[in-house]
Length: 157
Image 1 (tube, helix red, strand yellow):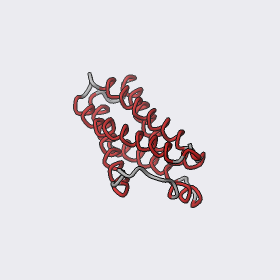
Image 2 (tube, rainbow, N blue to C red):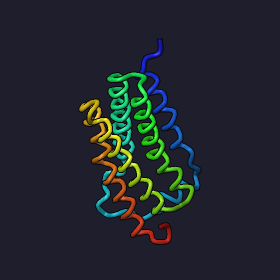
Image 3 (tube, one colour):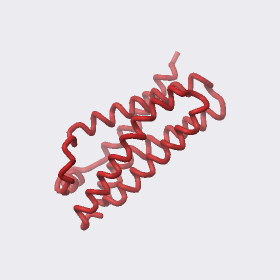
Image 4 (cartoon, one colour):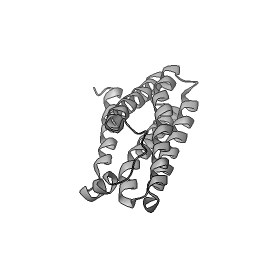
């Protein structure tokens, strides 16, 4: 029998693969951009997001296990999926459009989707909400960083 954590984790990995829809030219564009002088942990960002995605999937699992199969739970799973799609869209969409402003908008959108999700699951599972806190803390930092890069690279806004 397939367990709920397997489905949630598998779907999260499948959606995350969408971040790889970038070309070498996309990467070159991003690498040439100026960064704020205070951005010293860029190499750790993939690790940070991996932890955040694991926490998000674990949060979804907690919600599913509290009320499996209900209409409300399915709607919440849709919100979790939307959050991951918005988050994963940041890199390929920003890179393809070569627009830091688009990245800033996508980053901000992810924060608000996560905030809505956290409020929605608050009455179901406090553990699920706690597992969304890393996203709620890190997303504004990432969004602000993209906004700061937009100011340093006005030609790529």
